[in-house]
Image 1: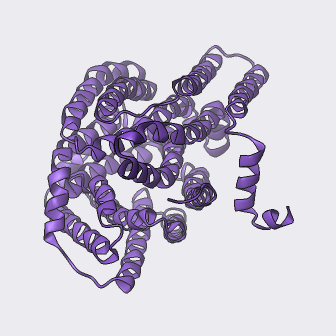
Image 2: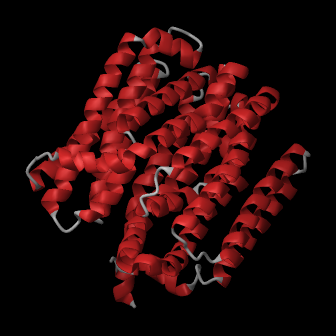
Image 3: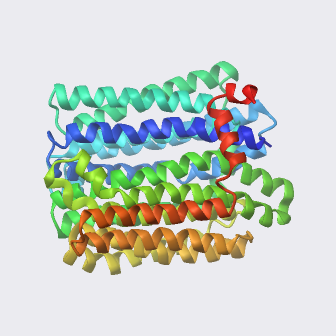
Length: 490
């Protein structure tokens, strides 16, 4: 089990590509938003919906189960690599078959997803880019679970920079339109996937074991309906915006989502640190792991929500800085979705609880109910309030279905959370976010709004210091990791 210093070092190592990956949309948005219209972003978003939906079928929920099963073979490098090769090749075959079918039916698929038969190619390229990214994730998880954070960082960073450069060339120089962004993603992901495969193949001979695939499928197959429903539910907002509102509304919503999604990406970078540690505690301590896991995860929750709080507080400044006036209607969308993504921290833990107990079948009912809630609440909210209604729908459904999932996961494997701290974290976060929306909608002077932002941030930092999450020892430990010479100077 990695030391506290090593975990902090890994968290910063994972954070570097995350920061770059989130910085790239911020660097390209001021350029692309002056070349592409909101309608172009709408088509991009709907093509991405199709890509994620199709890749959900290709993956058959194998990634989550692969992540779990890796620890069964962690002491045998040959078997752990064989599991990687076998599962990823199976997924690649599925993706190629579905890609062929999508090519044949591209016009009706384009009509279904974008209300126009002319966007078939952008759907296909988006699918190919998402499939390459999905395959790459298996290799990244392989190195993450071996706690080889530097390999993870280097590959992720290289892919992000390559995607950034290619997207700029295709959109800004060659004027290829929105499909140029997708071609950039495709080439960046394919290059990164090839690099990772070569690295693993040089370390361990390529070999396959279809029994491992069948063993993984036994656990993942009950997860396939939840993944299917979940893909629909998660992206139902964009699809319904396209049907009930406008493609431009989808574009505004998509831009707001890009800005708030950095919260979820940041949490995922932290997940790469804490998830292997949680699994190790579960397998080592068995039923006695609940209390240790709860205390261990509180600082990760606090840090995750801190990023969400910053996005909610300064959403209007971010949007003003990065986009022209026609995109400023996305400010409230950013704040609302910041609350939604902040609450999704629990999904990262609940999935571990259910996978550990092999109770994946229960997720089918959960995701089906989530889909129904999205339809029942989403249609009227989107129809009357457009992009903001879609954002509020995601948040409310996330609270309802997420609360149910927490209950189910706790019944499967009980984690003793530090409830008072958890409640305080979310009270400050949600209270601050709603306050920012109210102050904007009421037209309160910007100076007063800024003073309110500083006060809310100070309250959150105060609790971090009270709980000793923010303290001198942790500050020095982080400082030592960032600047190793500091340690010797002491």
